[in-house]
Image (cartoon, rainbow, N blue to C red; front, top):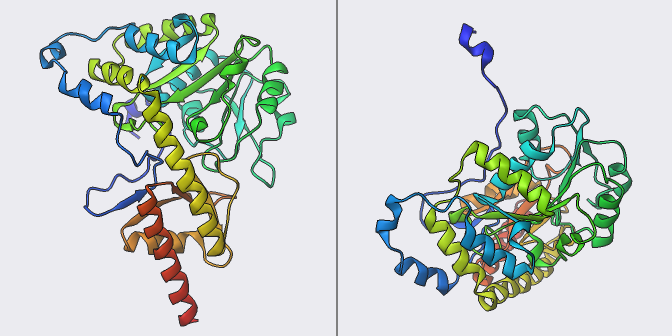
Length: 357
């Protein structure tokens, strides 16, 4: 080792899903929305004054903060905006998880949590999900330095009832509890409804899934005004201009089109439920997903084999070679046509495989 390497922070980084450059791919691996953003976003693009880009963006992100606050019927002081929910959660780790006690999160969950904890030298303990991939709430009622979990969970898609979340928050008045709601719009009830009762709760959401804007990197948190102030203090100590002017404008346009948002979410839910039935008929089982993906395992064919077979047919799904979930595929819900192609491709592969045995 060279001498200067002794002072380098070394971490095992998060591995993002594949972003293929070849044409004709059916991309069902990163839970992006298969539908384009609202037409209001397109109009905002057409009206964008390129000359504005020579100026710094508004560091307070006031127009977007105001639009989000209006949509969720909270005060502006209850809203924090960042460059994707990853940025918001990373800021939250830096701001709220500074105890010598370990933070708690599930053992099967969003795989960025342990990366952030390791990078920031935050002690942590993972808590095992039960056999149905649900949180065991009692595991989060011991001494800790903070709690975070997604609802619905990723990569399982399992939704916890709002009563479970409330009990965890209520039992941890000395800790900040972060609920990561990246997928809540596809079938869950948001914990935002609990914010008036609990000042230690922070709810994080994103534009990347239900609002079709993963490419713009917009995430936000809603919580107690003091929590939001502390988050902003860290942000302004880190980078005052975290969000570009274009993202701010497009974010306002997107959240103001509630009708389109509801239309696309309903289409994804309908296609998800259709796909569940078709996958069941093909011999797959899965938790009852309330997200925009299905976490499926086949009765006889290994998940890695299926993932590779689909890749040869230009269909990409996500495979995690990790303990407890290494025989599952996470399949993003695409358009109805894309999912029909997926089902037909799987059917053909399964039938051909049977013929060769």
